[in-house]
Image (cartoon, rainbow, N blue to C red; front, top):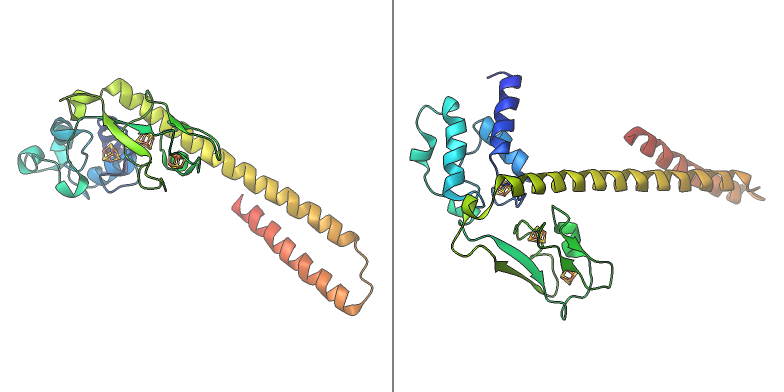
Length: 230
Ligand code: SF4
Ligand code: SF4
Ligand code: SF4
């Protein structure tokens, strides 16, 4: 399979995944799992949110690269990834939340709003039920509540919800990238201002001169590193 074909297969597999970005498959996101399947490094039975129906959909797409029917060989979710279950939505107990923001940082689809030392809330319509906000909460105030009755896997989810989750995940990635860039720029400006201030100093002794040179070298190295990163 050439690179173009591998990309095309990855895209088709990714389109068939639920996009909760939960990492239960053992990969950092749905795209990474799709890539691993396309290269034959992962089986199609590692996505609990997609459930059995999900394995079937992925196996159909993978048929050209598997000599035998992948679904017949792996008809159930690999237990190391979790189990198929009704879709839950996270809920934060307002009485217990201490406003630490750790859950916001963990949420892959920006479904949590709040600010430092203030109560946080979940925007249920965006929550994919990925569970990723649970472990970082220091006061265990997040609960997952089933919202789809007996329906599980793709019966509790839809391509439309998957598309929304994928778009929100992408938007979050872009936001984090933008914030990182802005922060780097802010630090670079601060370093440049410090260098100007340092250069304006007039050392009145050999020791002070050496100290000025030492500081100048540190700041210049930091600026060079920042420029290299750009
Ligand atoms: S929904 Fe979760 S388990 Fe399924 S592919 Fe995406 S990240 Fe992996
Ligand atoms: S609120 Fe929690 S469970 Fe819901 S999407 Fe965000 S991290 Fe996942
Ligand atoms: S991690 Fe827990 S305590 Fe911290 S803001 Fe989120 S819900 Fe509140």
